[in-house]
Image (cartoon, rainbow, N blue to C red; front, side):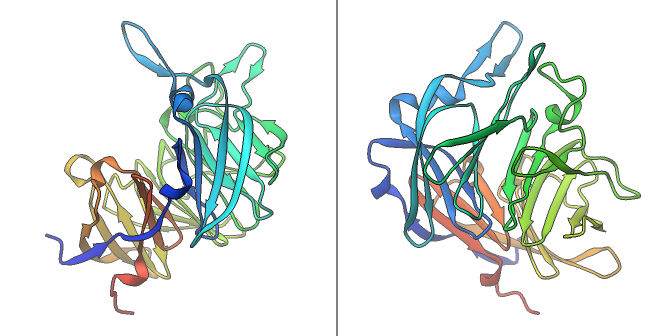
Length: 318
């Protein structure tokens, strides 16, 4: 049973900036600011097309038609608002570079006989397209570091291949791209662990990249020199991972554990211990609201309001 309470606190009301538009993507940047992609209500469904047949339903890898978006960045107020036209990405994921330019990635793409679809686009702070590249199919998450590295994690279809990918770009489960779209580094499992089959949680925090992935669900920290550090973990299925010093917060899980919140301490021996279960309080349904982690915080956007839960507010003893 949960022994303590963790609370999502209101950070900012976004509704004054959403008149006549609807949110289609949100993310947290390297500095903790919130990124919001919005479009007009009549174009919202354009980015989320599907192909249905008698056997299954598949996401479209391209929008039904080009559409325009506003990319807004918030801290304690609106700090950036950029209009981008002729967007083609479906199921878009947004990130920002330290210079104020943006990366917009479609989570799905096909490998066609003529070549792969270019599902990633870099836009200047003025909204003008700089270039496109292929980031692979089956993208689970994208996070850009404070140094401009593009970290892309993949779910199972991106790892094992679909949509014409016999040799998937995401076969490693995690890639680091440079701004030009070249793969600078690929993940390989540390000794004793399986390779990534599905990257459930990623957190790019300063110089470190943290992972918790299927099948082992161990904690893996990749440092600035790309060395990997491992801690055992027996909490499976979490979709968000926050970190503070030697503590890790896992949020989410399977079935009835979708609102589970557990903090563990990482030992020098490679174990995780001192589990503390938290009962989460918030003014929205956790089971149906996407919770994101960056650094030591969890974030959520619900009905135009931004909420945040910080590990520093949990009252954990040093």
